[in-house]
Picture 1: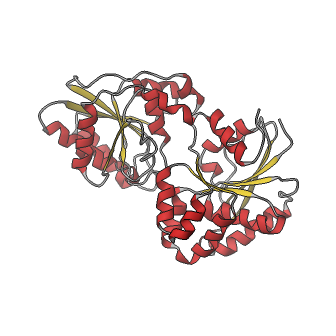
Picture 2: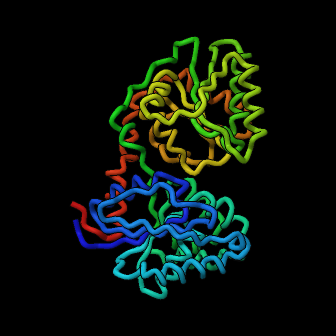
Picture 3: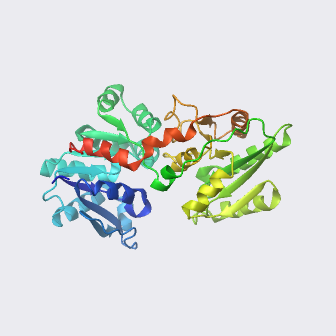
Length: 377
């Protein structure tokens, strides 16, 4: 253990429990302060009692901030300084680009604090892509960062494709790929792949929210198409709950459940041991999302020996380019999805659960500690 103190700026903390796993692992090696700005109508969530980590929830984000980005950043900055959070800090870790990264850059200017910044899917697909007026300031955030963290190569390439080549080349030199980790339960309960290439019945699995972005309608159309062809027959098990913002989409899905005998809906399953049983009862994991930051369910599937169907240009595409783990398909083309499933169903895969070692939080934490320029024993 050492005496370094890391200030995490994390405006996504209460909506993503992955961060608590990261902080729990880091807690053994460094002191941490985590600044978590939340909306006025939200309450602190995912509150964990760490050994040497302090969670600072701040009900500060107002509805008007949605339309006043620069005012929001200035307001958050003044508040975290007023709380004395920069005091005694050695390094700052910003967990997204446009909010946390902008705050880190202001702290860098005022308190000379070095920082790393992570780039997320909304940073790229929404903010950087469409909000041109914010690009100059965000480019400075990237240029002033010690390191830039992407969780997959595909999103690094997407961001750099929107920039002048000279800027992209400069930023590429200090960019790193560090994925999120999966829970220890998946690492401790790996399962070998099955040889189903000669089987006439293939069991497909989808685990995720029932929502438009996950593209489940196209998946259902692809499975329906496969079952109209000669050869293998396919069933699909779906695990996941509804998206409260898309009630009609969910109702249309439930109608499909009534229409197709090959479609089995299990609802939401939170118990990891039960989820593992479901993975092991199936042959191929299928989630051809329209947009996917990474999708840890793909890694969970690989841990249980399931090859995966995923989308070209999204999430994990390009992450396993040197190892065959499944197939990338065109999410906008049901024929492509169907053909991809058929090809995987006729292929024998080996050693799938060996590729997941990189997604062990214990190993990921070592990479972060190196970024913080911290010795790790």
